[in-house]
Amino acid sequence: MKSDFVNKRKEGIEPYEIDSKLAISMIQNMLNTPLESIFSIGDIKNYDLTFAKGTFNYHQCSKCSEPVYETGIRVKDNKYICISCGN
Ligand SMILES: [Zn+2]
Image (cartoon, rainbow, N blue to C red; front, side, top):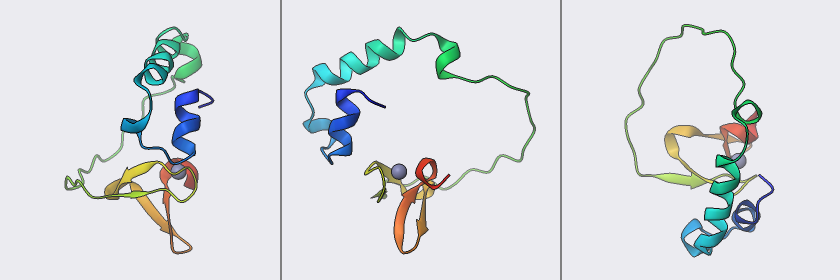
């Protein structure tokens, strides 16, 4: 989340406008990161899986500026907010 790519995204620059070398660098860092530091593995829990209808509509999170499909974004205080920022 501190990569040059993410910093550009936080500035509101769209992914396709960012030099692909920055994305490749971020991906290489991710691939070289030990799995334990990316994932936390715990007990398996059962839950009811529901499928939302597919959509191409999206909104930009008011906090992190990330574009999020409308099925994954919430409205809080009349502002769009992604699930990550809302937690
Ligand atoms: Zn967000």
